[in-house]
Image 1 (cartoon, rainbow, N blue to C red):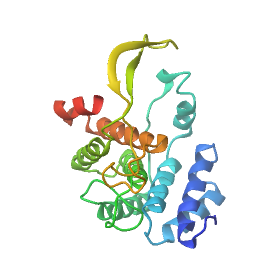
Image 2: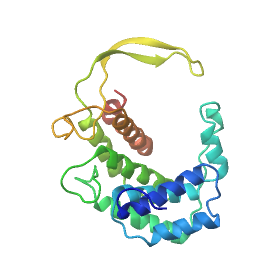
Image 3: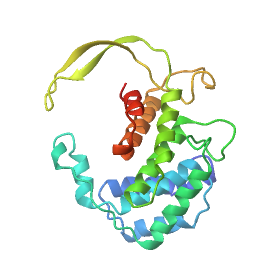
Amino acid sequence: WKGGIDAVWVEGNTALMLLALIRSGVYGHDPLIAKGFDFVKKQPFRRVYSVAAGIMAMEARYTPLEEIRAAEDYLDNPGGFRAQERRVAAEDLEWMQKAVDWLLGMAFNRRSWSYDEPKGRYDNSCTQYALLAFDAAARCGVQIDSKLWRAVAEHFLIVQNQRGPNVLRKARAVPGENATRAAGVPAKARGWGYQDSASDYTGGATYTSMTCAGLTGLMIARAWLGKDLEKQLASRIDA
């Protein structure tokens, strides 16, 4: 699929279209979908966004339809969701491994990413895409070193904005109920920007989108570290 202002994004556009179609219920091995993946796999690795989107699309291709449907109903039926095995074809798993290796080689200080080369400045948006790709690859059986999850968690903790408005932290009163209560704990609402406030080209502005990226990064890292997560790092993430 073509689109965007630059032809070098065509593989990324194609990957996002594949991901959207599969998550919408189109069979991952439909002839049209298969042609799209054939195109993506023939392209050189050249943009973090595009390569990451390709990995996510490939993982979706091998996600059982039952799991996709359960994920759609998660808010209404959280107990009905169970992650299932991805039985990835050997050639696609090999492509995913190469794509992961390329992304790892593009990291700033092994914990953050930019658009297409590991110099200049990192970008939390690109970092989020890379992390989502590693998460997808890990679910397919690609081995991801636990050091990566720790490093990414440290990155998002360090670049979280240090200042923000005073708020009362809220908590869910009872699981399954819609009502919330004020926990009575004063806190600062601290989000994320595209970079840390000291070096951000936007002047340290906080964005909802990048705050979602920061939260996603911390939750993914926490989940994959599991029992290997040190108490000190866990408390910093949960704070």
